[in-house]
Length: 369
Length: 174
Image (cartoon, rainbow over all chains, first blue to last red):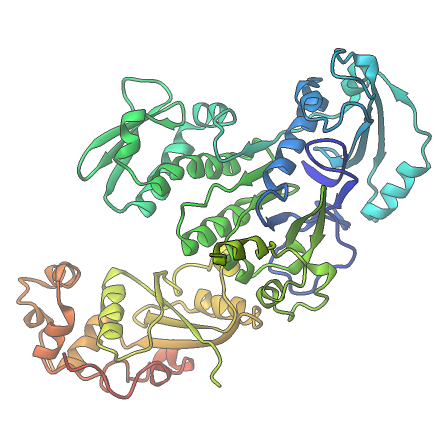
């Protein structure tokens, strides 16, 4: 699954927001290979997207918005979307362009009617349009988009329209969620066990072994030099939370994500701030591992506050900066301002080239006596 | 004004890692992160390229008692292709291997004498367990000039010994 573009208005805190995940020109000597749809070398897309930005700039919310949209399309579940309309007295809108498993560019556009708070939303409040175009051998994203623009827009009921949309998979992981974990560790226990052994021992060398429990399903035993504890249903049992470091505990979710990528079941990944408690070098190594493990036609999103990630050997277009001005969130890719691969990204961020530096001026109030 | 330089050592095994760490602590060689990776036996995985920092100097330390150099050459080519990140690639061929290098630099005919090991197999285990390898080396008049100073022969003769670039002039005496 590949997300090519997203537009959001009056949803999830976004107003008139849009972002495009293709890039126009082939990059010479890019360390990221296969940044195009397989067998479609001109249909280029950003395979890896490192999302950075200050606090409250939408890094997590953007992921939640995509999750809401995906659930709406795949499961016809509009609950999450409805609950995230910023102003119910105004129209809400999203547009998503994506490629699922076949070589087809889909565009799903939805308008949600304005309501006052007291009325329940009905299916008829959703004006949905679904368009598709096959992707030819020489097609670029722009060609395909133009063909979609030329098609007549027909709105209909999402309950019927979404039956014709190709299915696709996804994997989200947010700082405090657990919902996406169940399927992974129960369907890929060997992969998960292997990932746990490698990751947990790297995070805490005092961990000797992690193995599947012989007595309980979906459970793993962590053998530490000083104690033994358990992971059940992808989570550490409560009593052990004081025994292992916070970073080590996060290793469980990291292992789940790595084994999910290795399983090739999902095809699309959004990893939101799972590394806040992980040492910087290790975060870079784990991120490098996940990027290298991605399969063809897959896509990865990774949010972080760690500026050391700016020094990684990645093309500039892999870095997306979110910023908030008033109530508007906007997105800018690093290659918008940095046109040459030799331009130093970290220096550009330090010099606020992308205008994302937070405003510290209020802190001077602490200087007031 | 000097350029920032980042050294990244790639060594074949745990013994080499411990030894390189000791040489760094003794300030005989430049400091840098050490990774266990056999550059003669395994192709560099893609993920190693993503974490390359700008101005990285890769130091490859490898034994020369094997018969295949194709993978080593491929790894060097791959790193050279990332010249914007990899400032330099230094090869340090160990002639023939770490044990021989240690014998020459400590003037020992039998390496078991370094730790009082019962056998050669025990020697590696004793090296890994040694709590102060630097002191053990000093006790046997270790010479950094003699260490990693031989020219390889045979198929490895095409690889220059570039250890002088990472060796420092004066080490720590304690």
